[in-house]
Length: 117
Length: 110
Image 1 (cartoon, rainbow over the protein chains, first blue to last red):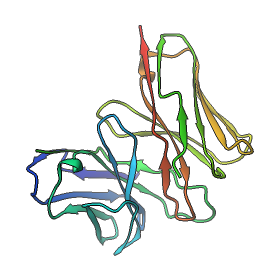
Image 2: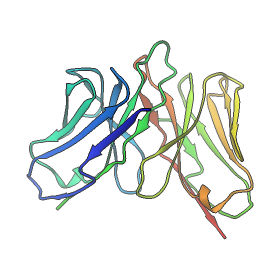
Image 3: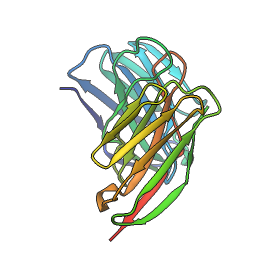
Image 4: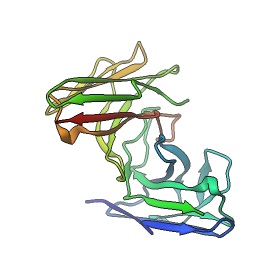
């Protein structure tokens, strides 16, 4: 069966410090990978998605970047954090999309709570 | 474009029913429903792919009206465990990504 893990689970970082959140998927190959962010009490905002190694699409211009150095590894980074970067970050995966606009069922990791102080 | 959910919040007593709606101004090709408990990741509930399709799992079911570009999630005889935030997600483009609504918070009280 497929599993997804992300870490760290929680972190408190000062403004201006760098960020690195990591996510790995097991039990599948060539998954689509996603980073979502959820501000406190808010909805799920898609930040980045990837359909393959080195292929990253950004949904929202921001202070963050993503990389996919290996097939099942997805990393979210920032060089200098802002207060507004605080939130609950969720990595997710889905099977490779085949046809149409139906969208894939996605499965979320446990999430990472980021507080920027 | 983000689908719109209504209502934003619902408070129920155990055993009562609730309906959560999800609508879009663009054509809907599928609707995915998720539930998120506080502090946890969203969990997949069900997907509806065809207009007119209805699905159910125990006392939670959903319908998809493709022509009206909307879907509804039905929770009957609600239990305390149904509390959480419900999200609908729709496919966007041909990449498989999902765009989610803003969520509906459901609170079931004893």
